Image (cartoon, rainbow, N blue to C red; front, side, top):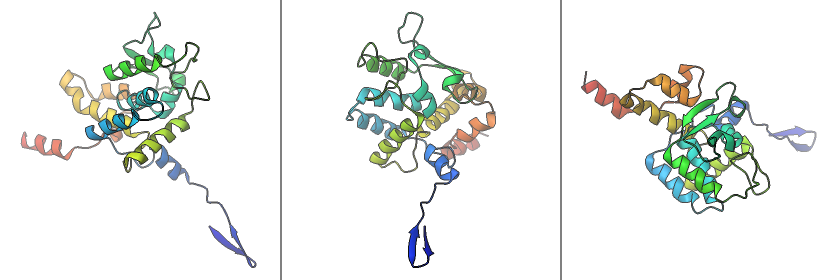
Length: 218
């Protein structure tokens, strides 16, 4: 923004609004969900990056476990390992690693478990308590996770995608399939860690094709 101050043009920095920041985090304007092809393209691209095992795990924790950026950054090995110290079959996410009191137990997808095992093999024994680390630190921040997703999706040309895209994809997919295994939208709410069912419903992307099919069956 430029303002005249006498004969001098003064440039004042424009501070981003809260809405703009929320959009960057995928909280204001809803982040787009990922198609199967986009998810596969992301996995393929991440295999070419400097830290393929770590980056693949970060993506899968979002798309196959529905974790928020904060939850990915604060996930510890204790939350993913069993009593014997081996990678378990569920993520025991504590409230301290989550948002408010949205800690929960998430059954571990086979791809997530395989990615955890593969990534763990790349680490030194004294790598620290946190699952996701960086070259400079034994832990990372939620903002760093947000930035990673932003960088990856920009490289792939995925417009409207953010760190929330994988989470929205996970919740939408679970909502569409939960009735086929005898569950309900309440189970999706529990997996997402939402205190309010309406929040879960807002995450679910509508399907025009499904709407057409259900109408034909009435």
